[in-house]
Length: 425
Ligand code: ATP
Image (cartoon, rainbow, N blue to C red):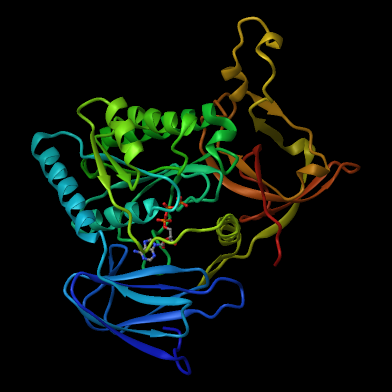
């Protein structure tokens, strides 16, 4: 426990089925807020809290301490806002979990597969939070569900610009979220699916294939099913990507958060056996500005290289000769149909690997290190890590990179992201 000495403390007595919501100021100089359960029982986004333990929340945190039975808690420090709400959709979310658990029990009895659930809705409706809640509840009753993260803007699993899957084996840590060990990660390269929708759909299919293969050999994973977190882009190609995802994963349940039109469209367009359910969003979900999202993305990358809270990583900086690596960008710029070579469609260009000769403009770009071996399909191969280009010397033909592991790079195929990271350390 970090000491709470000298901080203002405020006590809140919560009745059953209410929650204390608080936000910690953002910005590097903002003060952390600590929280402690004094009596009774409470949880944060599905993870149970220990009594008399001080949990620490850093700048920008937006938290809800919910209690089913009633409790009293102390806050130490000065949150930007703190209030108690009686109006929460938690009972509906719990009912949803119970219905999913029923499906898992049925799957166990019938030797079938458990529920595959897609969570959809516009931005800032609490999709990630609902996923976290349902996964933590499932794992608390002994299941082993899989989180599929398709939100390339705000990934809960890896750095931005990726899609991924993670087997959940324990509830999310109250302060740090799910423990990320051995996730399966694919390179997308930008923070919006719209930059290359064909690639986005392709990667969704890759994840679905790998997940299905795992379900065939792992009964617990099959019964546990999956919870798929999606992007907040629900119109046009974004909507089509949701329909594609539902079919690739053969989802059984779609949870639509706070968007009646989307609910009706999906009911109309998905096969009748898919259960489409409309759920309200929580009044506690806080809208995040563009700036706030950008900061969260930067923070995620910084954590990748430098660690998080108690765990510090020490990244390496070293030189890589141009000749040691092959650098590609996925997707050739679109050209008018009339200019395409005979027999080639625009779709083919979106999945094309374009070799890149490093130039100054590569500085600060993130690169994915592809796991592909000679002869593998690079676009459809997972990645084994990320590096950032910190300098390009075209004269000596050398790149300087920031890497989580020491020289040499484990693999030599690198994929360029649109995402840049300026190392301020
Ligand atoms: P995005 O569109 O970026 O994917 P989202 O729909 O997934 O967003 P979340 O990330 O789940 O939304 O929630 C947005 C923020 O609101 C998070 O910081 C989360 O911690 C906070 N939040 C969610 N539920 C509550 C609640 N009941 N009370 C207070 N804060 C909450």
